[in-house]
Length: 373
Image (cartoon, rainbow, N blue to C red; front, side):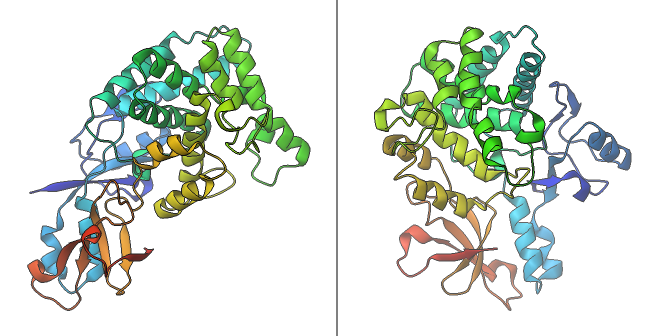
């Protein structure tokens, strides 16, 4: 039987489900291997180790014939059979997150900090990215978990490296970009959690304290021996292209290139994931918000490179066309992200083969997406 892959929250998993990707703990140790059948006791054990979501296998929609008149069943099966792949190896992602956490915890405890392991992890990520012929980013590929700060740091590094590779930066430059990006928020290590994780609105003094993390970060990275161009990422990643950012209100190319790259990666990941004070945006809203900010916040060249890797409607997402037909995204057009390939469903058909048709929206002037579901 053909099987697909789906990422779901652990409390939605039923016993008997097959694991589709190896599961690692926060130390990078494998807990459950791909192909394992989930039992009740596994679910509790995984929850206890902090695992909140994972990839599972689901049968393809061969069984839809049993529910040939149920549109929701057809949508569900179609979505489940579409693959969801991570941008980098899961073990590498976990190890990177663990190292960022160690550095921030040790610095806040005034202990010795060694960044050699971060450099090695960044080199590994670079090799993985360089081995891919094409990278189309979807929100499902940037796995969100409870410990936002550390996961965000890894995401921003990966996203920045994708842009750096696209801009033909050399290996040494990529190493400095990836390392500085991974540690861009290290200044938050000296800001109290009561301010950093406050769920309600910040006071003006609290907001000013959080803004200081960029200066704190630069001081920390300079002290632990990062090259100046990498350390400057922490200082300037909140500068804006129109000069309205902080801490120095730099404008245009006054902002170092690495900081211009990290700036867009930072904003993209922030609005793509759940935060303590807000819910994440849907993929199409993320795309539009990034585009809207482009005229003021971001370097146009950097934004062009970044946006070329985004997908407005990820594979597996549900959309509504201007004809009111519903469909599932099954393919992308990289340079026309607003016009993907859609599997459009027809109501009232008993023959499975005639229940849908695949349409490339880039090849038609009359069909377009009006909403998502």
